[in-house]
Every structure is written in C-alpha cells, then in structure tokens.
Amino acid sequence: MTAALFNPIKLGKLTLANRIVMPPMTRSRANNTDDCATDIMATYYAQRSSAGLIIGEGSQISAMAKGYAWTPGIYSDKQLSGWKKVTDAVHANHGIMFAQLWHVGRVTHPENIGNQQPISSSAIKAENVKVFIDDGKNGPGFVDVVEPREMTHADIQQVVEQFKQAALNAVKAGFDGIELHAANGYLINQFIDSESNLRTDEYGGSLSNRLRFLDEVITAMASAIGADKIGVRLAPLTTLNGTVDASPELTYTAAAKLLNQHDVAYIHIAEADWDDAPVMSIEFKQALRAAFKGVLIYAGKYTSQRATTAIESGLADMIAFGRPFVANPDLPARIKHGHTWASHNPETLFGGDEKGLTDYPSYT
Image 1 (cartoon, rainbow, N blue to C red):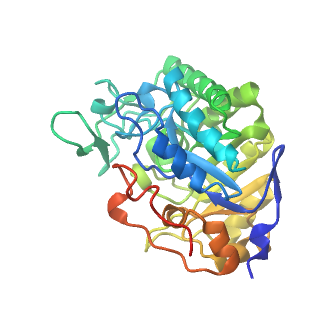
Image 2 (cartoon, one colour):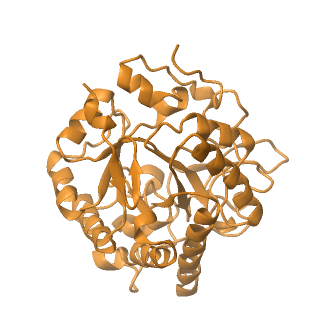
C-alpha cells in the first residue's frame, strides 16, 4: 500500500497533490551559447508534472557560478524567457515547480567561467574532481578542476546579492519557489564543511561561523521572496566533489535548527546513494526531525515501499525519486497502480537532444 504518498501536503502557502518529488537532476540540455532553457526542456518537465513538486535542475546565479557546459542560467533576461516556457508548460499541466539555484564555487574550470579563476571558501583544490567543458574547438569532455582563490568579503557580499536577485528572477520566470543548493560539494557546502573551509575570519573556524554564509544567503532571499517560497538542499554524508565534514551529525543538525529559525518551507536531504555509501542513522533523522518543523524531503534510492514507510514513520514528509523520473514520466501513476518502472539509458543522461530525455513513454 502506498496511500501515504498520495495524501496532499501544505508547502508554505501551496497545497501539493501528493508527496512525490521530482528532484533536481542536471541533464545538460541547455543552449551552450547563452545557457538558456530550451523547448525540449519545457516538454521534459511538463511530461513529469504529476509529481507533487518538481525541483528544476541546478541553475547558475551568475556567469561565475557555472560548473559544467550545457547547464542553464537564471541571471539574464533571455534565460528568464527560456525558463518561462518551462514553467508555463508545467503549470498548464497543473504542476508545481521550484527552481534550484546554485553557485558551484571551486567545482568548475576557467573554460566554463570566462577564463576567470574559480572562487571558494578557501584556496583548496577539490581533489580527484572533474568537470565537463565544451570549448567549441576540441570537442566536449571532462577536465580536472583548478585551485580556487579564497573569497574576499566583497566577493561574499556580491554572491549573497546574486542569490537574492536569482530568487527574484525565479519568481519572475514563473517558478512557485526556489531551492537553494547547499549540498554536493558546491559553494555553500564549501563553507559549511570543516575540511573545505580553513578561513580564520567570521566565515570560518567555529560551526556558527561556517554556517554564516548560508544564514546570510537565506536572509537575503527571504527578504526578497518570502521564506515560505524557499527550500534548501543539504547532503550531510556525501563526499561528492571533495567536501567532507568532520562531524556531520552535529553540523547538519545545527544547520537544520538555523533553517527552522528562518521558517523556510522545506529541507531536502540527499542521502548518499552509492553502493558502499554511509547510511544515515535513524537517530540522525530523528535529530533532524526534532530540529526542523517544516517539510522534510529525503532522496536516495527509494522504492515505493521504502518511501511509504519513511512517511508513515513521521521522519519524512515527502520523498524524491531521481533517476526513476528520468525513464518514467508518469512515475506517480506507476507507484499508485503498482506498475513496473522502466530503466533509464545511462548513455543519454547528459547532453544531446530529445533522445533519452522526452522519448520515454508513459505506462501502457
């Protein structure tokens, strides 16, 4: 029985039809000349609008925030026009969609950011991390990241303002809210985690200092669009892109308490989902539940039954299904009726055209 997944839920001022979330997944189908969302992206998201909530793929808040070729931006008028096609298509199918806002910090290459040096909390290169570039000459491919420079106070204030403007842009482009990407080793995560932040000023050292950048970004965005339109993605146990925290339970319970004080709409927890990944303990999840009174979303290799159990336990309010949404545009209906899930083609996840994006059929 999966009935718990189909109970409506309040998210800020919104009422969602079910507890099933399509999480942000980079698909690298944006136009690489101007980083605009494309018509095929509008079709892709519209096909999946039976999710209770769609969270769009990570969208860079500035030219410096871009980590990979073919990812969309949300800072130019042309980019907002591209996203408006997407949100109009989703709303036409009665869907609800948030934009995910990201700044990748050090997880990029000068080729992707106008030959600038990347910025980060500290001048530490992410080890064994590669990013995707397309320089238009040698053919697209993966290259090693470079050493970033430590952000100045002026840099920090500039990025806070860029996040605030991006939140306003998202609402202007028709999104119902935004998700701040503070996970998976990107810029905000680089400030939060102890091993990627060696600063000696008020943005480094103590836990409260390492959470200060997150605090300032949320404060700025909430002043612009309201905390009820804001969610935050966290990944306490992942070591993606080289960020590691020495005491993740302590750090991320504190982050949840901070976000609770801001009264944001939700926290979206990305559980580590590779085969030998560390498992989030029940005690950790209970601590997060106690710390945060808003909606808690979990993502990471969930099946219908595991998702139902998580919601019935009270530890989760919604469950995000990532890769299953790639090949199953009608995933909520398949869950409801017990139909089998199609498998995605890993060869067409990133880049390309409609193939592997919009050509997966609904269940017949």
